Image (cartoon, rainbow, N blue to C red; front, side, top):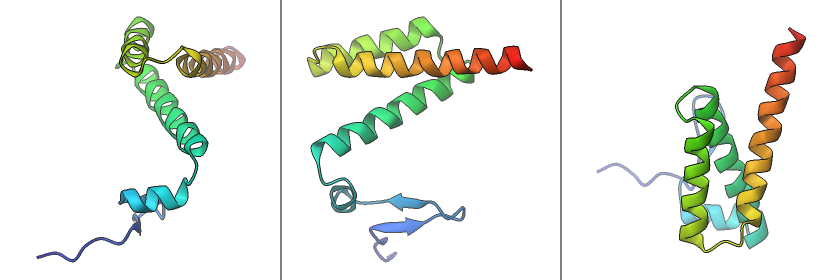
Length: 99
């Protein structure tokens, strides 16, 4: 039987990995901090999928609409994700034009 992993372990790249809910609560003690971390993660993930051609803009809109429907969100959080994705896409376009 393998020993239980530490709450925070280091990967080969030196990145800290959170491996338990308890460690997550310690690192992100407030609901606001947890929400910000989750939004940042979702935004980065969707942007990466879009940039790699895995998801198109309409498919991302479908994902966000489904998330809003499931969460009963009033749209502010979903709107923030959309706005950040648009901002990143615009920065990418500007970078492409500069090259």
